[in-house]
Length: 109
Image (cartoon, one colour):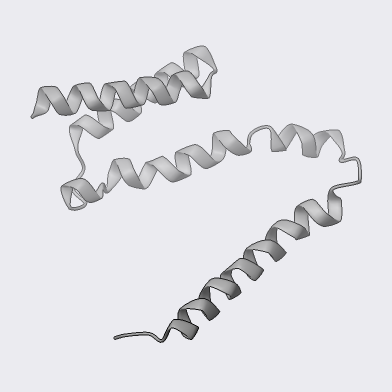
């Protein structure tokens, strides 16, 4: 199936407008107002909630192994989780997970 170039541009522009409207609903409408303390407290956990949501499918069903769970990726995820829990630092958890993944893949072949 081939698509005309105007059709591709229409999809890109539509997705851009949709993304803008989603972000504007939060930032544009609430940007100048003070948020209640309980909302600010919950917003601090956004990064902590988003990162596992992005990484979990890559650990459980990695495309590199055709969707088969891999001990190297599971080990790296467990180590990253442990480092993040102990040090309460996302950067150290990411670095530990990356280092462990490369080490486990090197050892495992």
